[in-house]
Length: 386
Image (cartoon, rainbow, N blue to C red; front, top):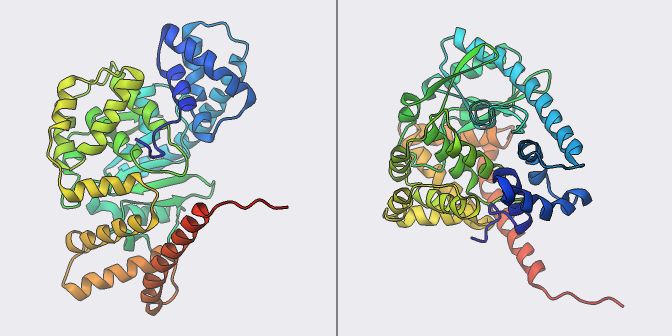
């Protein structure tokens, strides 16, 4: 497990201080304390400080540094309140227009599982709508003053899972129409919608994934290579597993992972949570995941997501595009290729359609050349300078 989504040893200490109880948490905090005092930690670690504050406060551990941690908590609380107030009005408009919607990721997790919006930082709001209502949702967002990141977001629908909109107050919402691109593309999200649960915040009614689907989403979304480690998936997963109000259907989790060919990330992430944080994942769950046969394509796809190899990732993107053309586009071959061209034109902000083929050829070549150059640079012996 060498990919960067796995925490470093110092980050593991912080996670244990945040998520364990009793002497184990106190011991981890004392070991990590010098790192906090020196401020030699990354942004991913900083985002866990509100959770560390609550855990130390609940442990009633005398700690002079608790005030600094409290500041991080209140900063997160105020930022999140601003985000949630802004999105509540948007959800109201969606409800009036009878556009079914569901909160994803940080906002849903903070409200339902952390049960305190000061504990889980979020940079934006993730809102999902039904696939057959996404164009109506985009039109409504524009009418309400939200600007899309891309000139023609509708062109992205067959090939992407979400796109960003920004309002005049610089609030960001990621509008989703598919839960995750990592899963089998020939399966829709109907089962996620059918098993969703109602949720309410700021007097606004919306929906959320049930606990099993929520855990699946968190772990799969977290199990991929990043330039810097993403620690929040671990805290999110533990909050879901430990929730007393929203019970987790482990049988459904295994079934969905198997059905959507996601057993590899699930068995590795859940095994890790058991090892590091005593997550108490039922043994039969891990046995079921480990005993599931995987296809060659599934194994290759997962290894690609874990690695930083640009050429391999480009192959994965091309494979995704091919499946999108086959599964998600409509019409004959020429009509599907036309949809693909409009997608690339919007994605890459190409002014003229005739330029798209040149971008399509040039971009992968540039990435491969950059990767080769980076590898040669890193492998060449350093020379001492006199």
